[in-house]
Amino acid sequence: MTVLAGGLVMMVAPGPGILGILVGLAILATEFAWAQRALHHAKAAAERAKEKALDPRTKRRNTIVAVLGGLLAGAVVIAYLVVYGFNLPWNVEDLTFWS
Image (tube, rainbow, N blue to C red; front, top):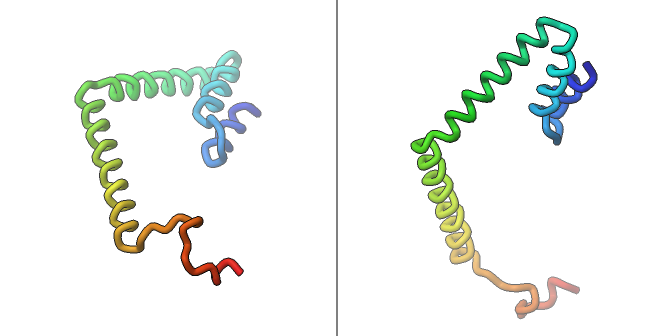
């Protein structure tokens, strides 16, 4: 039960929350039928998610979205540098800021 509770906490805190929940359910499934049913449903959902993620159309779409997002982020950074300028700290002409 503690592993399951730790997995639930890790869903909002840093850590492998889903893995903790699955391990907790696997431990509880050795004694409780409800945990065995919940584990079965979790495994089925994981299998469906795996199949969906391995679908070639989905992979292609995700790749296109990632590339476009990266290009957009790069364009935003370049636009910011063009508008506000880019001065390296060792090329600052007015040193009054530092004193």
